[in-house]
Amino acid sequence: MEIGRKDLIDKFYKFFEENEHKKIKNSSLVPENDPTVLFTTAGMHPLVPFLLGESHPQGKRLFNVQRCIRTGDIDEVGDTTHHTMFEMLGNWSLGDYFKENSIKQSFNFLTKVLGLSVNRLAVTVFSGDNDCPKDELSPKIWMDMGISKERIAFLPKKDNWWGPAGETGPCGPDTEIFYWKKNNEKTPVNFDSENKNWVEIWNNVFMEYFKDKEGKYVLAKQKNVDTGMGVERTVAILNGFEDNYLGDMWQPIIKEIELVTKKKYVDYPKEMRIVADHIKASVFIISDGIIPGNTEQGYVLRRLIRRAIRNLRILGSTEIGNLEKIAGPIFEIYMDYPKLENKERIMKELRLEEEKFVKTLENGLKEFDRISSSKNIDCKDAFLLYQSYGFPIEMILEMAREKGVEVNIDEFNKECDSHRELSRTAAAGKFRSGLADDSEQTKKLHTATHLLNEALRIVLDNPDIHQKGSNITPERLRFDFNFDRKLTEKEIQDVEELVNLKIQSGLPVRCDIMQLQKAKDFGAQGVFDSKYENQVKVYSMGSIGEEFSKEICAGPHVDNTFQLGHFKIIKEESSSSGVRRIKAILTSDI
Image (tube, rainbow, N blue to C red; front, side, top):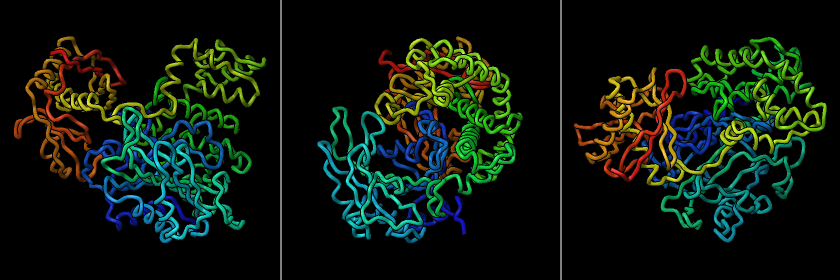
């Protein structure tokens, strides 16, 4: 009997509940308060503050399934294993258990719960270097669990190390678990990590070090465990599939593509995988509030939709509305995601983008054929395709590769300023700052957003104003909120003055952990939807009973508002329809 997505997730949940872990919510694909990546890329991403030492309201043992987007894999999609949007099963220990317990849990889940044979398992561990010693403990634990010495490979930092998330922070060695996927071939006695028939199924990261500002690795005060297991890949392994797209989270979508194109998956696997993957990722991105655009997340979304449309054309499908038909099964497969209930809005955005692109697609393809008749496509022609016909530069590069012509991308990036910034923000991204570095300035700006949020409600006399997005670097804060018009100069000045008044008042900042309903009764600010756990952290600013701000938030924050200095709004602008954006800084001037 085929084992499906829901079966795997349910087994994972039950196992970790029995091992005294608490389930945490699936976070948004758009990270809050972290400018360092465009999307949530792993299950640990929303937990960065807690890995740095913040206490989690659910405790020290956590687990969940997290939807993730990795834009670096977009060009790889089309093979049997890569996906733009995928689900990651993970469990965490925040300063609780460490290597032995973690490895035993992983081994027991794989062999006793999922029934995988120990004879088809192998692992890798950290080989050590000048910064940190060889991991001697993990291989001993693995051998005690029944993994033979021949199935343990010692690999360097580039293969078996995680982090830090920023220039500084927690990091450490990992141990990766591999499974021999060939059902009709005997498992080799020796493990070869370069052999593609060994498939990585789980990764256990042991954050036992802290990288400081001098680049030195010192033992961490709080040792954490962070694990990750991809749902799609594991389902394929459990069913003996060598193609992830044969799993139940893909097949209904593939079958719909076959219907609208009148083609068979077996004949056009690459194109159908791209269409299925990109439309699924697009549905989830739109469900988290992003619409197609020319910058940041909106650009990635536009790129996915337009690449899907182009591959549908390759499959012979030209009818407008097919994106919606193909998207249909996604809402049935992922009924456990509340945000997908907004089906009508998601479908509307897909159709609008499809209609917009189809208007220029045919002429753009003709123009591409004309300019690609030579051996190279110069910056001018590439920019024409991008600006006039709506071809994402990545799509131009892909089409050029298929035709065997070159695009002078260096000149494109030098001469086309708008695209140069676009490429930078639309890249997969690395952690560089934000909450990942837990700097004092970041804490101050994070705290200031709470004061700004409340000041806006008071000055604009609108209690329904809420945060719609936040992006913080050590240099500035960016705060999005629902409001339908531009603020006047007087309103901006009044907001600034009120925030600075509360800063100079030296309000104490207090954190309380309480039940969600109690937080509501307490008057804590927050958009009360499925994002919150049953227990939440509420940060209050002001004396008990006289709080100026009460807000549900994970942190981190300063201890007293007086530490913030001087608050200054540097820009107020539109972010999107019905949403305004404020950029502000903190200075030492008073």
